[in-house]
Image (cartoon, rainbow, N blue to C red; front, side, top):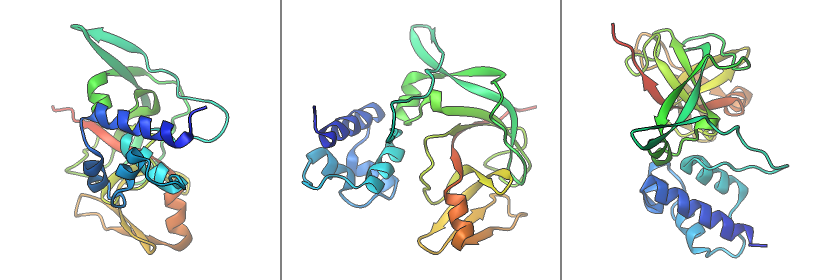
Length: 224
Protein backbone atom coordinates (compact mmCIF):
# COMPACT_ATOMS: atom_id res chain seq x y z
CA UNK A 1 0.00 0.00 0.00
CA UNK A 2 1.33 3.43 -0.92
CA UNK A 3 2.39 5.58 2.00
CA UNK A 4 -0.29 8.15 2.90
CA UNK A 5 2.19 11.03 2.61
CA UNK A 6 2.97 10.10 -1.01
CA UNK A 7 -0.74 9.88 -1.80
CA UNK A 8 -1.30 13.29 -0.24
CA UNK A 9 1.60 14.78 -2.24
CA UNK A 10 0.17 13.37 -5.47
CA UNK A 11 -3.29 14.81 -4.78
CA UNK A 12 -1.82 18.21 -3.88
CA UNK A 13 0.27 18.22 -7.06
CA UNK A 14 -2.78 17.34 -9.15
CA UNK A 15 -4.88 20.06 -7.56
CA UNK A 16 -2.17 22.65 -8.21
CA UNK A 17 -1.95 21.58 -11.84
CA UNK A 18 -5.73 21.79 -12.33
CA UNK A 19 -5.78 25.30 -10.89
CA UNK A 20 -2.77 26.38 -12.95
CA UNK A 21 -0.94 27.68 -9.89
CA UNK A 22 2.10 26.92 -7.75
CA UNK A 23 2.65 25.80 -4.17
CA UNK A 24 4.30 29.11 -3.31
CA UNK A 25 1.38 31.10 -4.74
CA UNK A 26 -1.14 29.08 -2.73
CA UNK A 27 0.86 29.55 0.47
CA UNK A 28 0.77 33.31 -0.01
CA UNK A 29 -2.86 33.55 -1.16
CA UNK A 30 -4.22 31.49 1.73
CA UNK A 31 -1.76 32.71 4.42
CA UNK A 32 -0.41 29.21 4.94
CA UNK A 33 2.86 28.73 6.82
CA UNK A 34 5.91 29.29 4.66
CA UNK A 35 7.00 26.15 2.77
CA UNK A 36 4.01 24.13 4.05
CA UNK A 37 2.75 23.09 0.61
CA UNK A 38 6.22 22.85 -0.95
CA UNK A 39 7.42 20.52 1.81
CA UNK A 40 4.50 18.18 1.08
CA UNK A 41 5.51 18.00 -2.58
CA UNK A 42 9.15 17.36 -1.67
CA UNK A 43 8.26 14.77 0.95
CA UNK A 44 10.99 16.26 3.08
CA UNK A 45 9.40 15.72 6.50
CA UNK A 46 9.94 12.23 7.91
CA UNK A 47 7.27 12.89 10.54
CA UNK A 48 4.69 13.66 7.86
CA UNK A 49 2.16 16.47 7.66
CA UNK A 50 0.17 17.37 10.78
CA UNK A 51 -3.59 16.99 10.62
CA UNK A 52 -4.24 20.71 11.08
CA UNK A 53 -1.79 21.65 8.35
CA UNK A 54 -3.22 19.01 5.99
CA UNK A 55 -6.70 20.36 6.58
CA UNK A 56 -5.62 23.93 5.81
CA UNK A 57 -3.92 22.79 2.59
CA UNK A 58 -6.98 20.78 1.55
CA UNK A 59 -9.29 23.73 2.19
CA UNK A 60 -7.06 25.98 0.08
CA UNK A 61 -6.97 23.53 -2.83
CA UNK A 62 -10.57 22.35 -2.71
CA UNK A 63 -9.62 18.85 -1.55
CA UNK A 64 -11.55 16.88 1.06
CA UNK A 65 -9.82 15.67 4.20
CA UNK A 66 -11.88 12.87 5.68
CA UNK A 67 -11.21 10.21 8.33
CA UNK A 68 -13.76 7.44 8.62
CA UNK A 69 -15.75 5.03 6.47
CA UNK A 70 -15.56 5.76 2.73
CA UNK A 71 -18.04 8.39 1.62
CA UNK A 72 -18.44 11.17 -0.88
CA UNK A 73 -20.85 13.78 -2.14
CA UNK A 74 -23.35 12.62 -4.76
CA UNK A 75 -21.91 13.24 -8.21
CA UNK A 76 -23.25 16.43 -9.72
CA UNK A 77 -25.43 16.03 -12.82
CA UNK A 78 -23.39 16.91 -15.90
CA UNK A 79 -24.17 18.28 -19.33
CA UNK A 80 -22.24 19.15 -22.48
CA UNK A 81 -22.56 22.43 -24.39
CA UNK A 82 -20.67 22.97 -27.66
CA UNK A 83 -18.32 20.14 -26.73
CA UNK A 84 -17.46 21.55 -23.31
CA UNK A 85 -18.42 19.70 -20.15
CA UNK A 86 -20.42 21.38 -17.40
CA UNK A 87 -21.25 20.30 -13.85
CA UNK A 88 -24.50 21.47 -12.31
CA UNK A 89 -24.91 22.96 -8.83
CA UNK A 90 -28.12 22.47 -6.88
CA UNK A 91 -30.22 25.57 -6.21
CA UNK A 92 -32.40 25.53 -3.09
CA UNK A 93 -35.55 27.53 -2.52
CA UNK A 94 -34.17 29.10 0.65
CA UNK A 95 -32.83 32.50 1.58
CA UNK A 96 -29.54 33.22 3.28
CA UNK A 97 -29.80 36.30 5.43
CA UNK A 98 -27.09 38.91 5.09
CA UNK A 99 -28.52 40.17 8.38
CA UNK A 100 -30.36 37.60 10.50
CA UNK A 101 -32.43 34.69 9.26
CA UNK A 102 -32.70 31.00 8.60
CA UNK A 103 -31.11 28.82 5.95
CA UNK A 104 -32.68 25.40 5.56
CA UNK A 105 -30.95 23.11 3.09
CA UNK A 106 -32.75 19.93 4.11
CA UNK A 107 -35.31 20.07 1.32
CA UNK A 108 -34.76 18.96 -2.28
CA UNK A 109 -33.32 21.48 -4.76
CA UNK A 110 -35.72 23.35 -7.02
CA UNK A 111 -33.33 23.32 -9.98
CA UNK A 112 -29.67 23.24 -11.02
CA UNK A 113 -27.36 25.76 -12.68
CA UNK A 114 -24.54 24.67 -14.99
CA UNK A 115 -20.92 25.76 -14.49
CA UNK A 116 -17.91 24.90 -16.62
CA UNK A 117 -15.99 21.93 -15.21
CA UNK A 118 -12.79 23.73 -16.17
CA UNK A 119 -13.80 26.88 -14.25
CA UNK A 120 -14.83 24.86 -11.20
CA UNK A 121 -11.51 22.98 -11.18
CA UNK A 122 -9.49 26.18 -11.61
CA UNK A 123 -11.23 27.64 -8.56
CA UNK A 124 -11.06 24.47 -6.46
CA UNK A 125 -14.85 24.12 -6.29
CA UNK A 126 -16.67 20.78 -6.11
CA UNK A 127 -20.12 21.07 -7.69
CA UNK A 128 -21.45 18.13 -5.67
CA UNK A 129 -20.39 19.81 -2.41
CA UNK A 130 -21.80 23.24 -3.30
CA UNK A 131 -25.26 24.78 -3.14
CA UNK A 132 -26.90 27.90 -4.51
CA UNK A 133 -29.21 30.09 -2.42
CA UNK A 134 -30.51 33.65 -2.52
CA UNK A 135 -29.41 36.50 -0.26
CA UNK A 136 -31.82 38.57 1.82
CA UNK A 137 -31.04 41.99 3.24
CA UNK A 138 -28.70 44.88 2.48
CA UNK A 139 -25.95 44.38 5.05
CA UNK A 140 -23.45 42.96 2.54
CA UNK A 141 -23.94 45.63 -0.14
CA UNK A 142 -22.20 46.43 -2.43
CA UNK A 143 -20.65 42.93 -2.50
CA UNK A 144 -23.99 41.10 -2.25
CA UNK A 145 -27.39 42.65 -2.89
CA UNK A 146 -30.80 41.59 -1.70
CA UNK A 147 -31.97 38.82 -4.03
CA UNK A 148 -28.49 37.89 -5.34
CA UNK A 149 -27.74 34.25 -5.97
CA UNK A 150 -24.66 32.93 -4.13
CA UNK A 151 -22.75 29.66 -4.28
CA UNK A 152 -21.64 28.13 -0.97
CA UNK A 153 -18.77 25.64 -1.15
CA UNK A 154 -19.51 23.45 1.84
CA UNK A 155 -16.00 22.00 1.93
CA UNK A 156 -14.43 25.40 2.56
CA UNK A 157 -15.00 25.66 6.31
CA UNK A 158 -11.45 26.61 7.32
CA UNK A 159 -11.64 30.33 8.02
CA UNK A 160 -9.54 32.72 5.94
CA UNK A 161 -9.55 36.25 7.27
CA UNK A 162 -11.51 38.71 5.14
CA UNK A 163 -13.57 36.14 3.22
CA UNK A 164 -17.38 35.85 3.21
CA UNK A 165 -18.96 32.80 4.86
CA UNK A 166 -22.36 31.34 5.62
CA UNK A 167 -22.48 30.17 9.24
CA UNK A 168 -24.79 29.17 12.03
CA UNK A 169 -25.16 31.73 14.79
CA UNK A 170 -27.41 30.30 17.47
CA UNK A 171 -30.69 29.39 15.76
CA UNK A 172 -29.92 31.54 12.72
CA UNK A 173 -27.69 31.10 9.71
CA UNK A 174 -26.00 34.24 8.47
CA UNK A 175 -23.74 35.56 5.72
CA UNK A 176 -20.91 37.86 6.81
CA UNK A 177 -17.32 38.77 6.06
CA UNK A 178 -15.22 37.29 8.86
CA UNK A 179 -11.96 38.78 10.04
CA UNK A 180 -9.66 36.88 12.38
CA UNK A 181 -7.66 38.33 15.25
CA UNK A 182 -5.56 35.20 15.93
CA UNK A 183 -6.31 33.66 19.30
CA UNK A 184 -8.34 36.68 20.37
CA UNK A 185 -11.54 37.32 18.42
CA UNK A 186 -13.59 37.00 15.27
CA UNK A 187 -15.07 40.13 13.73
CA UNK A 188 -18.31 39.67 11.79
CA UNK A 189 -18.36 42.52 9.30
CA UNK A 190 -21.04 43.87 7.01
CA UNK A 191 -19.81 45.52 3.81
CA UNK A 192 -22.60 48.07 4.14
CA UNK A 193 -21.28 50.83 6.46
CA UNK A 194 -24.79 51.31 7.89
CA UNK A 195 -24.36 48.05 9.81
CA UNK A 196 -21.97 47.79 12.74
CA UNK A 197 -19.34 45.07 13.08
CA UNK A 198 -19.81 42.40 15.74
CA UNK A 199 -16.98 41.03 17.88
CA UNK A 200 -16.99 37.46 19.16
CA UNK A 201 -14.52 36.22 21.77
CA UNK A 202 -14.04 33.13 23.90
CA UNK A 203 -16.70 30.45 23.53
CA UNK A 204 -18.75 32.68 21.24
CA UNK A 205 -15.78 32.85 18.87
CA UNK A 206 -15.39 29.07 18.98
CA UNK A 207 -19.10 28.57 18.33
CA UNK A 208 -18.82 30.52 15.08
CA UNK A 209 -15.65 28.70 13.99
CA UNK A 210 -17.24 25.31 14.59
CA UNK A 211 -20.46 26.14 12.73
CA UNK A 212 -19.23 27.39 9.37
CA UNK A 213 -21.53 26.13 6.61
CA UNK A 214 -19.11 27.12 3.85
CA UNK A 215 -17.45 29.95 1.98
CA UNK A 216 -19.23 32.12 -0.57
CA UNK A 217 -17.26 31.40 -3.75
CA UNK A 218 -19.49 32.95 -6.44
CA UNK A 219 -22.42 35.33 -6.75
CA UNK A 220 -24.82 36.34 -9.51
CA UNK A 221 -26.76 39.59 -9.64
CA UNK A 222 -30.09 40.05 -11.41
CA UNK A 223 -30.63 43.44 -13.05
CA UNK A 224 -34.00 45.02 -13.50
